[in-house]
Amino acid sequence: MELYQERGFDQTTAAEIAARAGVNERTFFRHFPDKREVLFDGEADLRTALMQAVAEAPEGLEPFEVLLRAFRESARALEDNRSFSEPRWKVIAVTPALRERELAKHAMLTDAVAEALRQRGVSDGLADLAARTGWAAFQHAVDAWADDPAPGLDAHLCRAFDDLRALSTAVPPTPASPEH
Image (cartoon, rainbow, N blue to C red; front, side):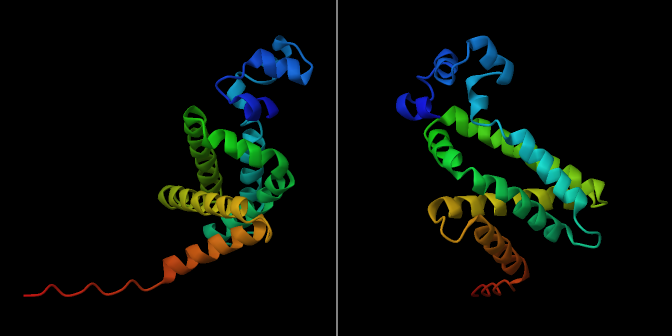
């Protein structure tokens, strides 16, 4: 992370990362297929944690509540790793290839969450919509937490889901009648 911050992602080589970590390049490539994956190393753990949290949620909860519980549980790890996450976000934000990679990783996570919901008996369409909407609320909360960490990620997450509930239950304004 230090190298990415000092030199930029594109100017940093895998050999430099390995040297800074005190290992040889071969060892580096045993752990990471490429230098991008250093920034996405926890994605598999997050996917597993989310799928497990969805699977273990109490029976009878609506998909929305299942997702809130799952995201709240997995958010703890993100909060515990803020010292890594914050510089990571900055590196990704200024590197188009990494932003694209992050979107692809988010799509895979969303698909995994949808599959976990389907395994709970949620229909295909509803599982996909719930997973996408839940992931959007999660990302919104993470962004809010990045800007204002004081209340904690859990508070931002609950607020995002509350706002989403309010949006889904709000009565839309009546469209104005066309004038004749």
